[in-house]
Image (cartoon, rainbow, N blue to C red; front, side, top):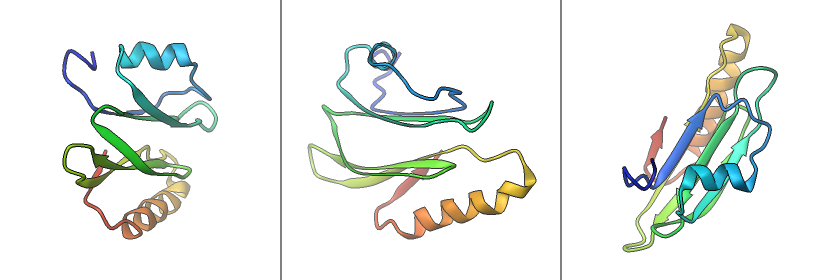
Length: 117
């Protein structure tokens, strides 16, 4: 799917996986050289996976929190930098403030344009 649709950045939420094997990630990448990072789920929900195509993008920074993960990416062809934030908001109302605080702190600490999804 990644090569068919020319996908260079992948963000998956609700992965429900504590970790990923090389084989699983290679199956998603389908031959592309990708950088991968993930956040394990808490209990039966959550889990995040983010990936970037190393042929086109360089991951210059990686941050993760309880509810989000973030790549700063640099395009290899022109060195333009931008960020991708992969988020999974909690369903529980008592965690909403913590989620929003984490997301706000991440955005305010970043000096590049950001895509949040």
